[in-house]
Image 1 (cartoon, rainbow, N blue to C red):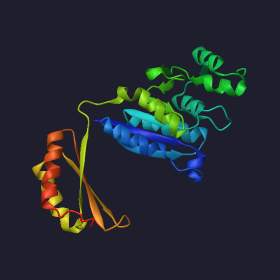
Image 2: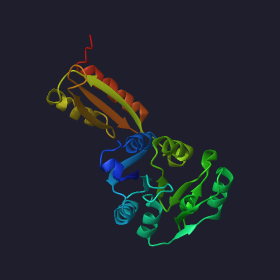
Image 3: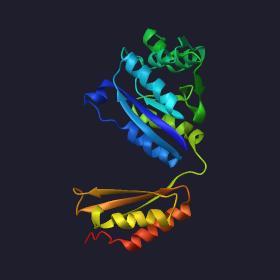
Length: 239
């Protein structure tokens, strides 16, 4: 099993100025690719918080994805923080300077040059014709905070993370309560080993109901389990 951590960087998330759109997207896409997210951290724009969290997540997970703090302004300190966390200096990379010179209509000023500084030893991934590469430091993938740009960069490199076999999923919805279906869920786990089942009650989305999710690497087992549960629970009547 390949595990991942997501590190969301930004005071704007912690203060409620903006909602975090990036970690829900990354969780969903990584799960589709067969990667299991084990940790999500939301941290402030400080050198120590970023460096400590990224280093810890890197040590404890196969993959790490950060979002935020990679632009040209004073609070974009992710690159330097990650460099400090790994005990290496920042270095200006000529290929990034060349990209800015080609793409900017104005001269490359000091603010723009901040975007050319990365932790020493970082790799560049140019997959999918990216204009500006994804910076990868060891197993840490440094993504921007703007949701549309993060999605663009992630989708360009997503093929690198696909696990074989990937995860399959299904869901069943019932009007019964969790206390009524608990024994049947336990029976399903015995009947279909290797399948993960979750139950999630909903009280404020129309009639009370429970969403049961079924996940596993064996698509036939997932489908069979979903059919069995569907036959052994009362469906939600929306009429």
